[in-house]
Length: 243
Length: 243
DNA sequence: CGACTAGTTGACATGAATCAAAACCTGTGG
DNA sequence: CCACAGGTTTTGATTCATGTCAACTAGTCG
Image: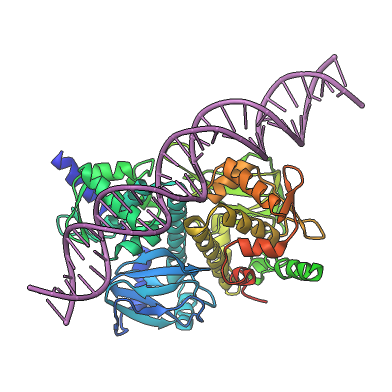
């Protein structure tokens, strides 16, 4: 049982960051100095002209849109190693805001695209990156369209695990964002998020240990409860072309 | 009042098909013979190796994924002029199925990408297309995450209008798909879709005239009810870079 | 340590889902 | 041209999951 648990952890972890595509694209940012972005500060605003792309070196960023009255939809969280603003044209179509204190590297959009069109080997990586983003967007549509609160929460925790927001042992997940962020990402309310965590705790799937940490007791059950039908390892495979 | 109504129709229509990006990309398909795809038949299946890209010449196609038990999520409808399969890597990540009888043109994925990398002028168009798809996916996430049944339905009708699924006068909208398709696209049930249409009819926003046609009585109210906050013309602007 | 904010829990309301039945188109054969 | 059979859509009654409002509790930071 314990054995199995560890195997499962192995299966999920370490699959996203070492994607071939991102690796070489990221080399564009290597020599660029890091900028600090304080928690809560915006990197750019929805509707602004797309002047720069960014590499997130440290911290977590939320991308969101506000509709009509104050309703906020978080369309994605970005983690260290992610690029910000790749899938954008003339205008940013979401606001990017630091969830935690961040460090980012910046490239002018024009430079980035010049480099891409100059280098034939960077280009497939770039397209690959766009396709990964698209795949993630599809997953999110499925989640929002058909999953219940519990499935959403479990799917979210699995995302965090696959992005290695964990301790060394891999069973303690860090939630860098607060409940409202999670709610706005999962299309729920803070109360439902909270209740769902409690319910999972009551069934010994996990134990919340402080505001920003959850200990996973059974990764296997978490995967079952995520409603991803076919097994979870498939889920990540389409965000990882080499492997 | 009538004047205003007509103006509004003008504002929305004719904005999507003449996008610069798609125009030149589509030239790749010009000389290729059309294939017929019967209503209900699949063009390709989720999980299959991505062998071809397609241009939809005639008809309507649904893209969907099935999760776990039989839950189906339609992630997009495609209309004449759209390209199918652009944002894909090694494997199709959704099934593409004809809603109505269709005509399509086919290009091998490899050829398509060869052409793209050869022609420096096609490339920005391709990237532009991917970004448009991304923008549409974002809109859909917002819809699924925060809109109620009425807002979803109205948003959907506005999409159909902007894709010119209308008569010459522009006030009679054709719904090529059935209620179940609409429900699976909007994250609702057929009953809720049906009830919502009836409710809008009761308020003289529209009149259903047969299974596949709805007459719009007040486009202005439809826009207001779509919950797109800022006005609707903004909505389409980010899917149209030149104009 | 104390005050403030974030998170949890409870009671209740509600919009959409579910289950069931009636009405309706649509195509077919007499 | 009409009657019927099939599926699709609409409508109705009821249930249920999640939202809302409100009170309470627990972290966190000065």
